[in-house]
Image (spheres, rainbow, N blue to C red):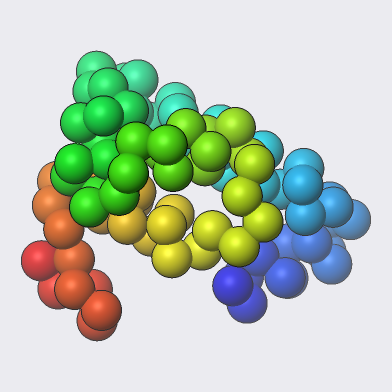
Amino acid sequence: MFILSVLLILYGVDSRELLAIIGGIVRSKRKKQKISQERLAELADLHPTYISEIERGRLENQADREEKAEAGLAGGKRDAVGNR
């Protein structure tokens, strides 16, 4: 979350724009790996609706969900300290 705050300050990007950028990155990586939102949700231990919301930049407090989505794209679930 600290990094997001720094980006907001340094680049003058509002939070909604930043969430849209992050969502676009998640969507792009998912599509490059040729997996569905449903499969990413399964890998990330999230509901498919959350993946959709992340990709559309619609969630205001989504840092934990983004980390889970990133873990799913990296190939597996992670625990609270980042171990698979």
